[in-house]
Image (cartoon, rainbow, N blue to C red; front, side, top):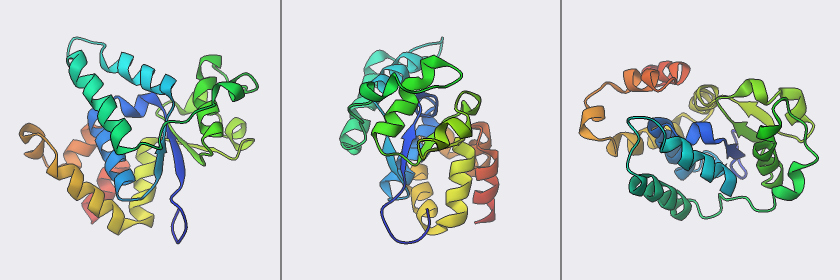
Length: 188
């Protein structure tokens, strides 16, 4: 990931797009060129459905606004043609084949997911893809591209609502289940 050349292409599973803080961090990292985000229309549908669940779910209009903003911000992120690949893939949970199919069709080198157990390294390696948890991914980026991560964190911090902006950044990151990344940020 370090060095010259195009940023790594990484498919984002729905489970890393639903949490607001994590999604905002990933999008800022992508915006400063640390990686190229990818997802499919089916991942978008899962993102939307998961975001609308639960007692603290935001209004449908806000979730749809977030989806629209993501499409506008990253117009090349949506992977087409993944359906043609899905049937040939094997994973422990066949419901997750569409995620790997999106990564394959999108030419991704990484699959960023909080659900590593359903994406065995060996199964993904056969397609030239590595699974990575979001905390490990951001932590690695911080070690490899500190200046870019700093820019992403500045943009991220600038957009935080007041109730979150008051919280120290490492504490916010730990609450967002990013403990290794929080440690890296503390070292900056």
